[in-house]
Image (cartoon, rainbow, N blue to C red; front, side, top):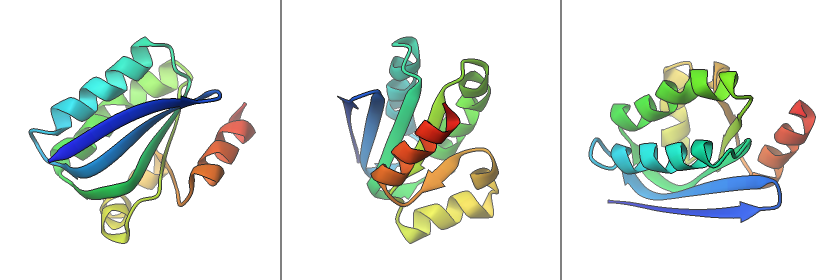
Length: 115
């Protein structure tokens, strides 16, 4: 089961994930990202600190948006991943395309450097 909450914090739009992103829940993740993009959010942070599991379908959601992020100058940073989740992103080589960091503070600092 996945719980998704969102909040604005200054110039940042934060999507908080709690639980598991399996094939069924990946639809909800997709909707949350689409809502952020359609709301013209440019600084998108994804809090993964309470994310216990992500399936290939969930990872596919992030991959599907990579071109949109680049084309629309949207800065995406995932932060707070548990070791087993982070390892999956690393095995797939996604840290080359998606910024991943340990803390929200560091995620915000990455955004400031890109601007």
